[in-house]
Amino acid sequence: MIRVIIADDETRICKLIIKLIHWDKLDMLIVGTANNGIEALELIEKENPDIVITDIRMPGYDGLDMIEKAKKINNTLEFIIISGYGQFEYAKRAIEFGVKEYLLKPINKEDLYKTLLKVGEHVKKNKYQSSLEKEYELILKNDANRIRESFLSNFLFYNSEGFKEYTIKEINENHHFHFQEGFFSIAALKLDYRSKEDLGHIKTMMNEIVDMIKSKLQNITYEVDSIRNKNNLYIVMNYNQKKKKQMEAVFLRVLEYFNQRISTAEKLEVTVALGEEVKELKDIAESFESAKLLIEDRILKGTRKIIKLDKIRTDNTEIEDVFSNFSKKFIKAVEVLDGDEVKKLLLNFKRDISFRNIRGTDLKRMINEIGSIYYITMKNNNMKIDHVPEDYTKLKITIEDCNSIDGLFNLILNYITSSLSVISENKPHNHLRQIREAKKYIEENYMKNITLEDLGVHIGFSPSYFSSLFKKETGTSFIEYLSKVRVEKAKDLLKESDLRIQDICLMVGYHDAKYFTKSFIKHTGLKPNEYRKIFA
Image (cartoon, rainbow, N blue to C red; front, side, top):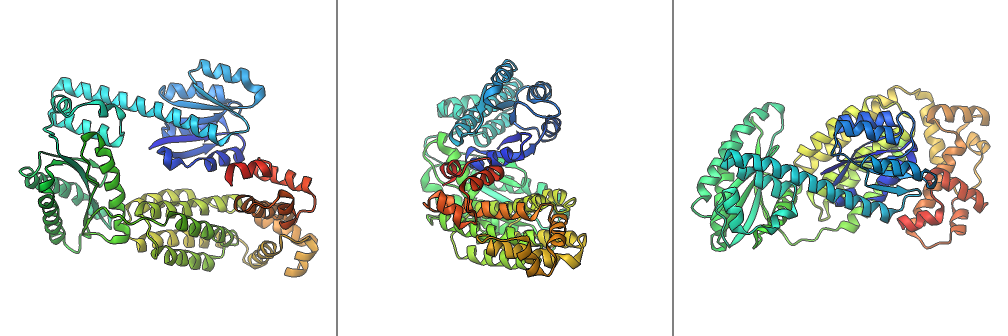
């Protein structure tokens, strides 16, 4: 995936950019955000991004200084500049540094998407060109196996359009293959392990599996080869369709052989997914993508078997609605450190999605998002989270290797409940219940004219004492917290209804439309009507 860093001294701008784009659809991944030029440069050195979206003016190093220094670290790095109307001269200077794209504030969703699409294509083109240069070096060394491997790696992992212009004859001559007209498909093979002690066996077993599959398919196919990526093995096949059942039988025999040979103590599990069949070599990336999706479905369908393409449609809209409803309740439970409620919500969410058609990749994405939501909620509420970033990094790696729905939910549940326990131990227990009650009262009565006196009576404290206690425990004032809750409710109504903004203003507890708009801008950076245009 294309790695992206966002740098802006306004945190809300970073959050807005993240929220505006479906990054997965652009094959992009946000690897970090920075609020000044120094942080941005450190992130660039650490994360090795492909694209940096940066404000032109920032504390520390300003945007131009940071770009100049970053180019010395990686001269292929692409920058997208964000500038205000009064900063056009800075933008012109940035272009002199080789920056090709810049956006004016306020950021427009469509402009941002088009710019990312354009820059992303440029990044892919550069990667493809670089990989070709490496391949040409191998050609000079006349290393046939490495040339074949390099071709498959470029074709599949970068999905380069350049190869689609080649004929089968040209590919065979230039890359040492024996492809013929017929059918093409890719099988994904995954070795799952349950302990680090098993890692030593995986490389040896991978070699054995490759050798066995190739030897058994050699006389059935026109061409067969393999390529690895971490613990995934991909088998590339070209064949006459009449041989398809024989090929599947080979995979079944290999699967049975290795799963029987593996001892219970080793806890290794082998699973195969057969990708979509295509008629043209140039379309084999489609088979590759379907094989990658299918192998993740072992989370729901089980391991130690062959998973084939099915025609079942996933309930994407329903699943996203279920996840959205869960997220809102989850955030509230985390804010008041209610571990029991968090556990209940996670188990209910697991039950709800178990009855729906969901892909393994979507389930992993949601589990990762739950971890992100937890981290962001903790940070936004000024909780002590020193242990969270390191633990979350480990969690993401473990999620990637997980092979069952029970395992995924146990991971996220243990991570969050143990983290909440650590945080709770560091907070004064005698006031947690009162703060929790106060937040609950606000959630249930935000539409009314709530005062400090009302809350004081509700939880048994004087208004002045409650005010200082609330600020100390949550890091924000009562008024600010109430305003935040009201704006969040207004955001939901703007997205999900056609109600007039004046009516929404009243429904969330504001009686002055101007004050409502001012508060909304403070929390979102947008006017209510602008927010509706972008997110509705």
